[in-house]
Structure formats: C-alpha cells, structure tokens
Length: 316
Image 1 (cartoon, rainbow, N blue to C red):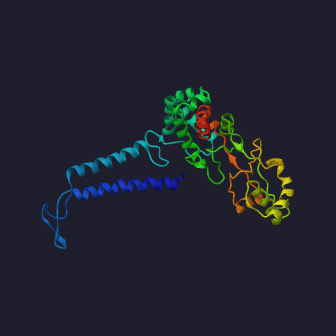
Image 2 (image 1 turned 45 degrees about the vertical axis):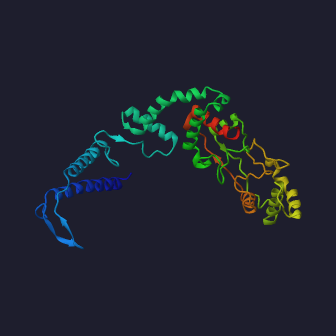
C-alpha cells in the first residue's frame, strides 16, 4: 500500500475515533439548559425533555473509544504495524513461490503474521486426519461418509469457483458429476488431473484451413449429425470429407481421445455449448482450456480426499 493511502486510512480512522470522543464530551457536558426541563422546541405537540445520556451508554461509548485507540496502537493499521508489528498476512505476494519465501522470512525475522499462525495450527490439528485418509485406498474412502464430507468441503473451498458447488460445471468448465471425461474418469486419472493440472493441447482455429465460412458450416453440420441431430444432408456430406483434418484429435468416428483431452463429439455433452453458434465458434476460432496444478497448493493428502469425493460423484 502506498504511503498516501496508508496515511489516508490512518488519519480517517483517528478522525472518527477522536470525533466520537468529542461528541461524547459534548453530551456529558450539558449546555442545552437544566436537566429534566422541557426544550424550547416542539413538533405536533411533542416536546423534547433535556435528559442526560444513560450512564451505561456513556460508559460503553468510552470503553469503545479507549479500545479503538488501544487496538490501533497495538495492532496498527495500513502500513503502520503497531507496537507488536502485527500483520494479518504477508502483503504484496503474487505467486505461490513468493508466498513461501515471505512465510520463511517472517518466521526467521520473528514477525507476527496471523495467516502463518493459523495455517500452522490447521496443519497441526488436521494434518493427521488428512494423512490417515490419504493412507486409505479409494474403495475404503467411498464407504466412509465422513471422508467424503471432508472431500466435499475441500472441493467447495478450492474447486467450486470453476466447477460449481454441485460440481456440475459451467461454460468452459467440465461437469464432474457425469461419466464424460476429457482425460479419463478413473480415480487415478482424476487425481492426476488435480495434482499436475491440465493444459489442453489446444484446438487451433480452422476457419482458414477449411476454406472460410462455408467450410466451417459444413464441418459444423457434420459434427452436429454425429450426435443424432437433424442437419442439411448435403452440408454434412461435404463436412464429412473435411473432417479428416479433425480426426487426428477426435478420432475417425468423432469419439474423442482422452490421451489428448479431445472431447467426444458423438454425445450431447458440450464443454463450450452445443448450439450451432457455439460449435461454429469452436471450429472457426479454436479452444484451449487450462486447469492449474494443485499439488503444491493442497499437497498429496488433501488432493487424495478431494479425488475420492469427485470420483464418488460419477460412481455412486
């Protein structure tokens, strides 16, 4: 955080705290007349009485003000670290490597970083639980409701942003609850995908190679026919002849290739949408998906439990 914004936040906070103290003093030192008497204004026959602020309310305000100043002095605010030089987390960290380096340095320097302390406590409390689950084969985890609940919580915390809290995916992110898998749906393949991530070989834009818009329309018609849809027979026949450019990845019958992550085109499951417009966009402009690797973020034990949960969704 820049010095300007740090000073802005600290000064603004002090103005609020000290302003509250001033208002409290003005209320305590009554300058509006004698207590218990009527005030010189009224509204619709209602007259205000000059009554003091309840004592418990005054005490609570005073405690809050003292607490605020004390908290600010001890724990700090913005770039000011306070007496304890306390930090909520390591700041200006933009990668996992930088985060690890910052944690190591803060420990060596003896800094008080709340995030580091909470992560250490979590590892001490839950580390053994994850290790016990990781030592079990998937068949046992599938029969353990508590293990699957743990896997579900880890999934929601780390995977739901892309795949949804129900694991049914969204546009560009695969549904993990069915039996359609780009790279394989066995437990080992699922764990491999989570551990090392997936970077699609990528589908290149085919518009120029297919001879422009007409060639794209013909291939799209043939691709749509593979999943049993009604299409223009003449266009589909012309598209079938051009589909030879696609066979290297999707196979001669369009059933896909899990080794390359090439999707099956013969079903009605579409990662980027199965409408004519969506398929046309895919063929003309190409597609390339990326899933990050989680082994360095979560570690083998947690990934093992998540993998069991994901596997359970399509293998009830």
